[in-house]
Length: 325
Image 1 (spheres, rainbow, N blue to C red):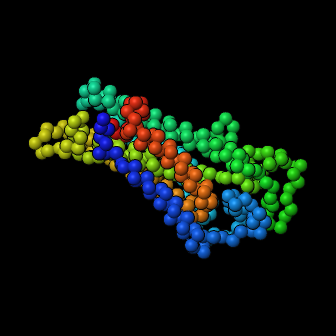
Image 2 (cartoon, rainbow, N blue to C red; image 1 turned 30 degrees about the vertical axis):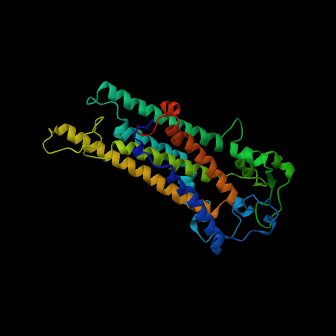
Image 3 (cartoon, helix red, strand yellow; image 1 turned 90 degrees about the vertical axis):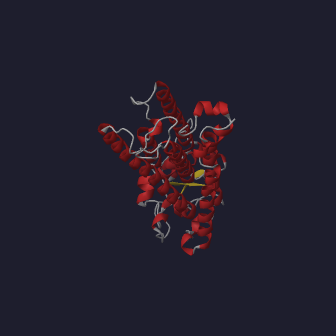
């Protein structure tokens, strides 16, 4: 059974850009002297899979590269709230792309029903992706899955010096740090999240966010990427001819909606582009090789279930749909 509009769906091969990005970043971090900041002496005892103590506490020498700083503006206002940007871009697609416009007098009831179904299925895909992100990074019946996996693999919150040259705070003055089960709570208490396998939440989120936006934009844009086209089912992309009757009000409305559609796609591809760049920066400056690749694996697994598996499994496709179909 042929997949509807399969010619508009990106090939799964395009997902190879993510492991290639991590590979390139990891190679650069191993080769470039500036990508290997010196570590304090007391960090050498940390586990082989743990990030450096300096990275956790911002105590290393000033990074040569601006993107190696955890407080760089892109990390603070883009990556840290990355799912908010993802949600805004996703919503803009549903609100502006012709593939999802179902409230139009020019559509037959059947066409309205088709586009309404597309909207519901697109929202369901967003919900599945968001749920995975939330369970992995925010909450999973308590600590998130990433934090739980860190503890299960032997990680704990260790007490460390809060400033160079100062003694550590008395353990009795604060909660026992080894009993803290989230990285955020550990660092707030003045400890270091060390000793376990810390799946890269940055890699996971950036890969998942950029992939779902790209798949959705390509799918939706395939059905309505022509600003001056007459869009009806069965007439995808037919350009308006000089002999076609033209309604001035309709033309003005189409022009306005075309502008919104264009800016929506600019927002989406802007988020995708910046997301890829920050993924590359993460590959160079943060986490170990294995931590980055496990984050990648979880993200690609999620993308596979949402966007690739429906092409092969019709019952699942009937539920979750395909972008723009």
